[in-house]
Length: 402
Image 1 (cartoon, rainbow, N blue to C red):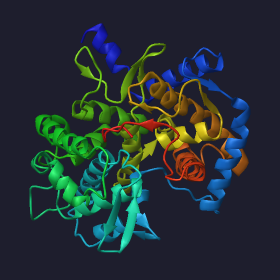
Image 2 (image 1 turned 45 degrees about the vertical axis):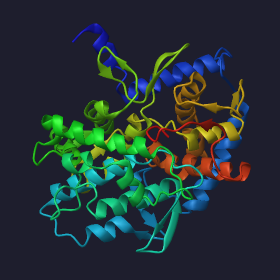
Image 3 (image 1 turned 120 degrees about the horizontal axis):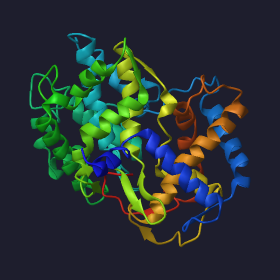
Image 4 (image 1 turned 180 degrees about the vertical axis):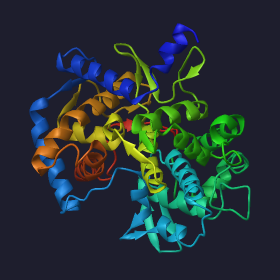
């Protein structure tokens, strides 16, 4: 491994995300960051708002982790649990592999849907949009065997099933038409195709106990546990290594794909890894149900996405130096630094929210602050400020970042 490759791999961790975010924060605090200034006087009121949202949503403060599983629950009905309980699983490992398959495909399909798209679920008469709609659509596609090449085992994703999925099939499953457009449709399909190719090519990661499948990462993580205990940052490091090749049009350094990591003129490469970190949070529950205890949850970071980031802009904590009305690409320095500052601010608002709720960091890790929490508060304030409830910045989406 060359020193340059070694440098590249140091960007593939939660610690790297947090470290660079603190560098961005220090620059902004000194008034030296090109695109953003900080108004930390507005942070206490923002924390008040987040704590209020938490108490309204969870009066008993029984907040679950921020994970994809929350989006499969509608009106108190856990749709995945209803599906899973009808299956006779061979053992706990088999169920965990299926849940990894579902979480991985569903999270990868979750980048922003746009304001116009809706999914109508004929089984429940639910109509859902944005993340919840994408979750529901991907759950039904998984339930129907849309990611499986084995008609006798629909509740799985495998290399062949993922490779054959195309934009037309995804459009049909997600009810896309001229009157119901979904942003980044072809990009989502290509991402799943690349996932299938990567799964097939890396049997040492994805096929330890079964045919190549995304859920094979469960067996890899189980093997990485020590006496049944696994540190959460290891989940992310495994994901970033295993899924690195799936990302299209992303930076690479000395042949190492960097994923959601972008160059910035003042900060160098800025790792963010939003979807991968959300996926890491989402894999904690299947691991624990299967008997693997996950520790060091706060070793992961907050998520650099538009709800959390939008909260700080809409609450006046982050003040743009430039024009908020123009459209940005995800690689624009203003967006890269906004997302990195979001990670730093989440670390700083979390203890303030805990203080207002009267809970400890052990009782209320960052994953609960996000769910309770900043993500919901970001959505609420966006709806109050903009008719479509969208983010404060217009960002071109290819279906693989936001």
